[in-house]
Length: 480
Image (tube, rainbow, N blue to C red):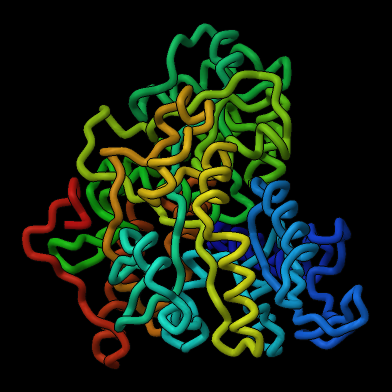
């Protein structure tokens, strides 16, 4: 119990730090180049601001969590603000950390923005509470025609209501430093989980004297680190999603044992980049860009822009499929249809917000430019037909959404975030405890399975959730 208490104490301290950080200067307002307090309120009325011509302009506030595309979007926002004839001014703000926490606070205080960049956790959390406006009230026939292929029931359409329109796709991949691999005498990126562990060891053994280490993960937030890695690894290796087996309609985490064991080795003190257990993703990327980390796992949509613009990198990097044990793939890897925008249903400026959104973010010319600049992988047929993929995608085929990737159905927890209540630590925090050596893997995974199935049963019993069981479910084709 002493070890467990120590770990829980560490978690409590981390939560307190994150809570304080949510109120600190993590928000960058890229529309005017200033940086301010993450919890700061507008001093003027939230919907109006004095225009430069002497009249009042309708202010549309947009929040984003992304920095990799900030340069392009900021230019588009500035151009729109200078040229639109609808008397609208867009205030585009970026939350570099604690995006979900900032949104929670904004909804609680009644100060949520008009538009928010879609994030899965945020979307699912507020889906059943009526916070998201229905696109149907605004979409014309041209819009529907262009984006019909990405309006998918169970993903962004529920009960006939369309909540956002994704324009790009992202998933997790292994990113590696080619220069470091060559220096360590490793010819190719790892094809199996076993090779990944061995390669990480070799890099650290040979190059740690130069401050270079084999592997890192942004474990400051277990959900952030493991949601972009182990989640996908288990889909590929086990054919289940977030512990849920769609064939049986039950949770079963016991098969995660070999994956967690390998990760425990990867994150050990004689392999991992020192201190990465307390790193957020951007500080980790900084070290990767500086040539200090051999490999890590992250999202395909962000890294190309990050290393071209945010943290310019002189070393050559590469990308590969997430390795699985023995190279035996049992399921397709899920991908996230992203670059969508959620509209605050309580906004007093919905019409103005829609006009700004349409003008800035949904023209095929803009979406083609976004794709061609390597900022996101388009999933819109009209865009793909007219755009020339950025060279980074041509050179790194595994960045693309391909035949090995598919949309997975929502698990019971994803479709019922408010009613699905797990007693104790969630799966990501539980995984982190095992990886960092604070709890036993075998007994911990059994306990996690029991707790998630208990939460599922409770949600079914109280009517808030339901079992999701799909006869003949094929993890290699999960969307069929």
